[in-house]
Amino acid sequence: IFRMESELEGLAASLGGALKVDENSLGEHPRFSHQYKNAAKASEQQARRRNEALDRIRSAREDKFDRYRQIAEMEDEGESVSSEEARRLYDGALMTSEWLIDIPEELTQSWISVMIPTGKRALVIANRGVTKVYNKGGRLLRSLDSRLPGGQKGGQGKAKGHSCMLDCIVNLEKLQFFVLDVIQWNDMTFYESPFDLRRFYLNSRMEENMQLGHTHPKSRATFHLLPSCVATTEAIANMMSTSVDFPMDGVLFYHPEVLYTPGQSPLVGWLKPWMLPEILNVPIPEKFTCGAPSSALKFIEQFNEENNFSSQVKKNAMIE
Image 1 (cartoon, rainbow, N blue to C red):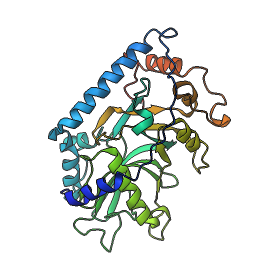
Image 2 (cartoon, rainbow, N blue to C red; image 1 turned 120 degrees about the vertical axis):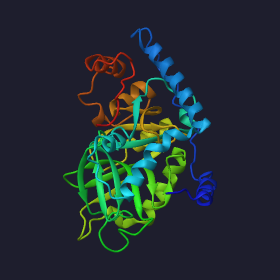
Image 3 (cartoon, rainbow, N blue to C red; image 1 turned 180 degrees about the vertical axis):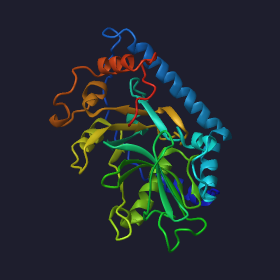
């Protein structure tokens, strides 16, 4: 597996003009220190971790990417994820989020928000003519045919260089896959690429392969892009008003420079829909507030305490 540097550079150049940044401001972020004594400390800790994560990204340490190379090599060789050593590779391989408590100053200028449906988080790997679906713990949930590169029997399914590794939300009953992120597409690997480039490339591939969104006589599995926008008040409000054919679970916020690394990242934030007005001053349709708790911050603190987390930022505040 290798990276095609020239194509990535071309994509990066194209990306420069691809994202339009809205200058709207989210306004002043409400401060909760008077209401909840630990909130300010949690915010400072999250900001510090975010800066440290950016420093690690810019240092480009190679060892953080070993896991994805090993997973890809294992899939290339057709090995079963049955041994304890192999299982550990897949366990925790997905990049996960934190509650978005501290609001970064550059949020409205560069961060990208993505609408998230209700479903199971899954690592989807298509290779050697089969598509495998793993949960967050590395357990194989299902093997099936798909129209992803390398994901279907016959044709080029088993041909060398045809493979795919995606981060998805899946509805297993309907075999609907909503693609969050791309880790590998054919011979190109993206775990060392920033999120904005990964998103741009993913959008391009999905648009070029419209058949992925439709069932096929040999495969019921469908793959779909999720609505996304730059994280401004107006853009997020418009996204939340978009009519979608799935139940919404929340919104993920990605720093544009975040590389795809296993485990929790402070450069990926998570909020439930009803939290947006309180945390980000974003107006949302009334349907998202019906029956919602009265305080987002209180909900987060209570949730953390009930789940025995010492930090105010829940370790596993992420999509289930």
